[in-house]
Image 1 (cartoon, helix red, strand yellow):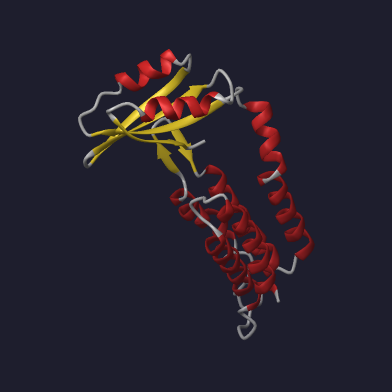
Image 2: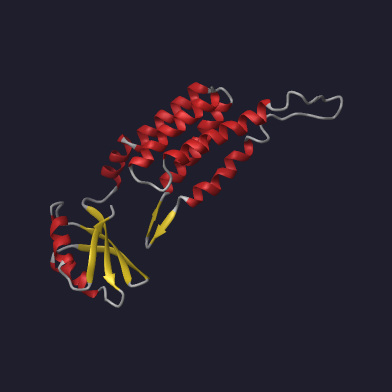
Length: 215
């Protein structure tokens, strides 16, 4: 029952990540939660056939295995963090993996109400609070644009076209790979409607083979 509860609560958070096409989705979150629950169960209940007593000098600490989950989950979380040019993605997904490990530990210990509350808070923070934080923290009309250039093409025509459209470029980075170059720009749109004009203008350049909004 405890493993099933861990799978359900971890899976719910994983589904939210899956719908947003993040690095770790439904199966990853569910497995992390179930694994944490199993480690907690082993830590607390797997030693019933062993004799522990202060008199014999053999003591028992039911938290010694579960405690390693807190640091061990960092290896999986680090794998979900991806650096793309000047931006970093995956921090929220890494945090949810860390959280579902705690939820799994709570389920393994039979601390169901705390696990349910933590899962509910997580879903609220990933959904409604995400919208609120963007409205408060982000600058108006800030977007991230990915432009695919030919292997030897310069970024100058792209920057010039954006300048002619009255678009401010906060930062940009260029990465080369194979027969193409990928340019990631963080820009300030004069209006929300200007995004379509930017795609049309950049798509008409001879050096550009693709234009995608990434954020």
